[in-house]
Length: 299
Ligand code: MLT
Ligand code: MN
Ligand code: ZN
Image (cartoon, rainbow, N blue to C red; front, side, top):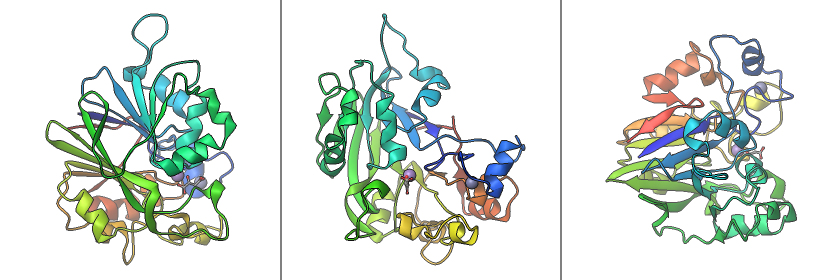
């Protein structure tokens, strides 16, 4: 199995169009300590011919252009992307569907909850269901979206997408709104969890023994955005467990047996994005790699 991290940033990317935080400013300066990053997506294959795109980011056009493996290779119209799977309905995970039009057939998989929100938005019919069937998936039941990859979706603590929030929303319930993926091929397991509000025992049971884990690395501290004067929401309020602190992902996942552990969906404010920061050192000392665009995971 081979996975390519197409986009390692959270919503907004790095630099984010309207942000003057330290990391965005360094990225704009072409400072060698920070590389720009596109929004959250990976591509995975077993046979090299058929690729599963997990999450369709607003940057998908740029991501495909930058990734030779995803260029068309047969006939007049073709794409190696044979299936697309969504882990939630957030803008950074679904807006790329608007780019994947042009009557190109592929299978689209999402939970019933996420499919309902696509069905309710007519603009997504540009990915014409005649070519792009929206297929149901049953949680916790393995299926094979592309040859050789056996995928199991499981609920993780999360919340509804930001654009569907209302007064009644609950944060941290493990429902179909936010899922993680267990991707298995040839006895090797890749776990992809780009959004997770809490590292519960159930989440740990899923991850245990994975050969590689790509995990929610949105913020380093819970109050990072508040303290930087960039908003009033904590990481947990946004449905993302912070890396540091009590109950943070570094602590909760510390003793879990896992092969490579890589942070993805990293918000542009997160100081781990900058080489030689204390926070980068802390994450790396705990065995974590900081995901970057184009990073490959071969299992
Ligand atoms: C998130 O991961 O919290 C969302 O992508 C936020 C957003 O939609 O901008
Ligand atoms: Mn996001
Ligand atoms: Zn920023």
